Every structure is written in C-alpha cells, then in structure tokens.
Length: 552
Image (cartoon, rainbow, N blue to C red; front, side, top):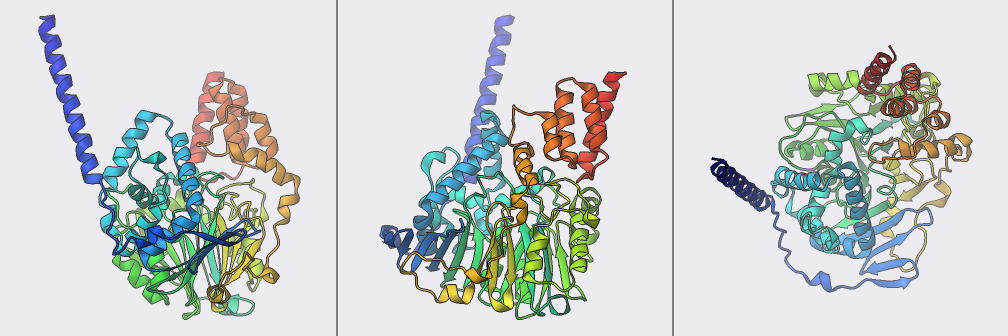
C-alpha cells in the first residue's frame, strides 16, 4: 500500500514539475521582446574620439563632465543613431546605473528564489510593453542597449532590460509608502512673478538610493523630427522626468495614487518625452497625453512660453482630466486636483492618508509669504525644510517640500529659455544655469564649461551646519532597503530630534529586542510629532499597544 502511495505521489510531483516547466516556458515565450530592425547598422562601427582631455565626440555629438559634477551630453540625428551614440558616449554610466539598480533590487528582495519569481512576473506583466511604445523610441532604446552589460543577461537580454527600466518611475508608484515617490512642483507668472515671466520649480523626489542619484546627465537633444529639447536624466534613460524644449514648453511629472495595475501600457516617462519633443503649447501636450494608455496615475505639469502660463494634465489608466487656475500660480504635489479625477474615491483616500496635501499647503503658504516670485525665491522654496507656519517637523519628513531625497531640483524660465539644475547633495548644492539658445548654437571643440556662471545660485548654507552633519548620520537608517545592523536607537533621536521617524525607528528596534518599556516611550514621543502618513501613525499606535500589553 505504501509503495503504491509513493508511486502516486511521485507521479503527481512529476506532473506538477512538468506543468511548472511548461508555465515558465510559456511566460518566457510571451514575455520575449524582439528588438526593432534599424534601416542600417553602420553607426555601430563609428568610434569615439577625444579632441581634448575630458571631451568625447562622435561627429557633432559630444559628452563631458562639468566641474559642477553634472555630466553634459549633446546628441542629434535619427532614433537608432541617437541611441547608439548616446550609449557609446555614456557607456560607463549606462552600465553603472544598471548595476546600482540591480543591487538595490537585491536589497529589496534578498531571496534568489523570490527574485526569480519576480523576474517571471515582471516579464508576464510587461509582455505587451513594446506594443505601447512608438517605433522611434524603441529604436533609440535599442541603440542605447548595444552597450548594456551582459552580466545581467540571466534577467533578460539587454534590449528587453533597458526597455523595462523605462517603467521604473511607474513601478515606484507601488512603493509610495516608502517615500520613494513624493514630488513637488509649482509655477508662477504675470502678477505672481517679479518680472511677469513664467517661472517653474520642481523637486524630483524619486529615491532608490544615493548611488542611483550620483551620476546625473543634462542631456541636450537635437532629433531629426520634432523640437530640440533638454532633460535631466541618467545613464540608459531616454524618457523624460524634467525637461524644456526650444519652444519654451516644459514638462515635469508627479505621481498620483494608483490602483495596482493589471498590465503594462506606455511608461509615463515616454509620454513625457513625446510631449517634450513634439508639443509647443499646452493644448498640443494634452492631445499627445490623451492618445496614450498608461498603467499608472500621473500629473503632468506643463509650462508654456507661448501660452504664458502653466496647467496640469491628469491621467489614469481609465481617464484624463485637465486642471487650470484663474489666477497666476499653480501647485502640484501627489494628488489630483481636477473636477473629475480629483473627486474619485481613490484620490480622496490618498488626500486623507498621505503627506501630499500638507506639502501642497506649504508651497501655497510660502508663495504667499514671499510676495512676487523670482528664480532665487523658487530655489529657496525648493530647499525649504520647515512645516506649515515654519514649524520644525524633523529633517526628511515626507510632508516637507525638501525631503532630502531629491534626485534633482530644477527651475525653468521658459520665455528666456533658461534652466537651473541642482548639484549634489540633493537640491542643496549650487544651481547651475543653462541657456538653451546658446547650448544648441555651440560647436564643442574643446573641454569647456557651458553653463552660465554669472547666473549660478549658490549652495544652501544648511550644508555648513551641525544639523546637516547629524542628518547625514541619520539618513542611512531611513529606508527599509538600506538595512543596518549597527542601529543605535537613542542616537537616531539625537541626530533628528523633531522627527517622528527617528522615534518610530527607535521604537521598532526596542520592540524587536523585547525592550517594551523603551519601545513604548519612543512610540509615545513619536506620536506627539508631525507624522507624515496615516499608515505610519497607525503603525506606531499598533506597536505602542503591543508594547503596553507586554508591560501589564
């Protein structure tokens, strides 16, 4: 009888293994993405030259590193050629960025088994990704992928990997509770600006580690179709996060609350890229956004020199909305404002539970206090680390405009074609200014600075304070994907004494180590601080109850 049961069990196990193999093969087959076919591959044979130390050139295309720490890239031509040239000039950054991204993924999902499952899930989820991306951008991405490292071919072939990385911002939506996505943007014009021109400021608070944000590229594109434009990017990324074109149209993106998507569509960054490359007015930007299906919710703040104002396009997988103001200023954080999408239950719940409305109010408060806005005042707002009413709510709080996580801060003055970009760390380093008209008229023959030195905004004086030094000690403990075994709970609250987060981390440590009295004390103190989200408040209240029950 036992032998018969063993045979039946072995047969069932064999069938299950066979079914699993068939399922994996099926997923691999449907998830496989075939690269586009370029008209010519001749560009692959072109070599990089170095006419001057620090300057790298292919034809009219060039690449260098500024003394500011920002990399600068100029590329032109047809899609595949642009991609190949981009890759050849920035190949070290492309490979470094993927290494950092992959290392961070391993920290988030340390189990090799779960990583392999995740790989197949992402492959299945993004099985139709290439069908939602234009041939132009697929060719450009394919060109860049020619220099991708083969160290990660076990994940997917280079082209498929680079294509999927363009949805990284979208994936970040699912991680909003970890403070990875929490951007702030605003604009003033006419009566609200000192010189009446349109001024736009934004912090791109997308955080997946300090290493990921280390090497930023200021890219200047002169495509064979559409408008010339600039954007702030990183190695391998051809989508747009923040940018301005030669017509004085700007695009910045802010994540809104999304349901868990069921399948991929067009990545947000590539919708923003198409707007930047092909739109010169807010109406044209709306037409482009409207035609795309996206798999997450997003706000596009569009500034336009031609329109002399800024407006917000709000988009979800199911719909689109348009938000404009009667006055001369507009603010965007991470919730929708439109008459339709602003009233959805999901958005209303996000307003109730997240830090987004608090940041929105703080921007409006500072704009009111500052009077007529200027570029310098815009930089000051982007760097502001106080809560409503100027209250100290702890460094790094998600309710702050400056959360000390920004990949970059950026300021646009579209009518003048001027753009200021922050340098490290975060948006605290000096803001350097580029004049688009001058950059696109320049022919690079030697390694020289191209930013407008006389328009530089100095670094934030916060960098010279003891509070900054203490925060740098606190910062590595802040994120769950940077696990630390050397945590000193009492030091956390010394380094960041007004931060609920410091007390929450200390309380969690003491609770895990069954030091219930200390845990309860930290949670009680933390709950008296300005807590960023409802989820974190509920987390502390729940753990405080656990600690108190153990003390009875």
